[in-house]
Image 1 (tube, rainbow, N blue to C red):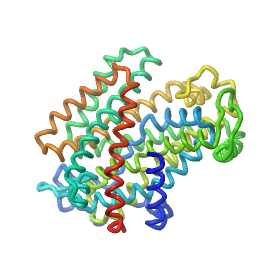
Image 2 (cartoon, helix red, strand yellow):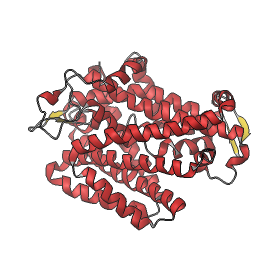
Image 3 (tube, one colour):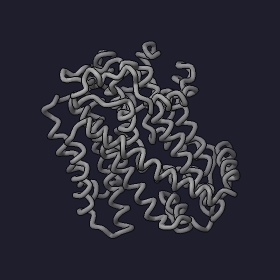
Image 4 (cartoon, helix red, strand yellow):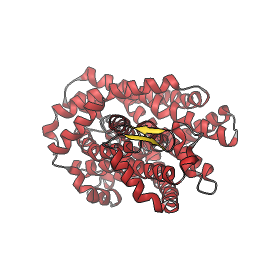
Length: 422
């Protein structure tokens, strides 16, 4: 999967002549109103969302605990060089994200009461003419929604609240289910509105915390960058007491974390982008491309710098922490650092719960129509509670398998229809 995804990222970077070079314009598009928006035509419908809301929904799903815990694990297992490979994978993955969003926009289906609906399942069915493959992809999306988007995120919330405040997992599960239920039942407009508000706030909160930590460790920042770049290409001895690395380990864990953090290649971002109220596929594809930039190129990189600079400044501070808790060790430098990180983790996990519920709901609609919506929402809310109280070692393994199953049909469609991507 690493070879397939990284190869796809490199291919579309070259095929589309480096769309990454227009990232500043893409960011500007994402915050500016679209003059050709369709909301003027369907201003009273509840199935049309702005381009920014579509981007926020994607970011809500991708900005999860992987940006905090995943980077920590990658550094612990692959050394500081893993941050470089994670960052590079995000840069290249922007091209694949552009491609899959462009195709989903082309093959989206108009709704009778306004707005559009789309995603890789519609590309496979209407563009590639492979109905069975489209059904397979939709089923995998639903399974992924129950796995990486639901149970694993609610379990992360439980572990955080139990460790810090000793709150019962059952109470946490019920509370989170109720909170998500209020948002989910409101439909795409409600999800888009909440994500548009939640994502910028939680992102800014976490970034401010990281910038404060980088200011505290400013004398080690340049050295941290040097360590990251150097260890990306050569082996190093134990770093910070227990972290040793080699080129192979750094590349393996850095690339793996980058690929599965931003979800470029899975096609999930294209489900949200196809519902944006715009007529221009290139504009929307550029906007959705920024999700990969913010998720991996920026957020994972800043988390990596915080961890590595802290280890260089305080090597003894990470003793006693597990692979997944190097970020926690770094946040100890801030007053109430445990609480600040816990708030960030909970906010990220809640956003992922909302975003992935939408992806699974659209896959359910593709398979069963409007009649399957309520049943899906009920099961999803129950799975939130179940994830909060259960052990998830097997669930993580199954989630990786399901992600791989989503990648294969999506990439087949990308390559077969690549000439249609402008």
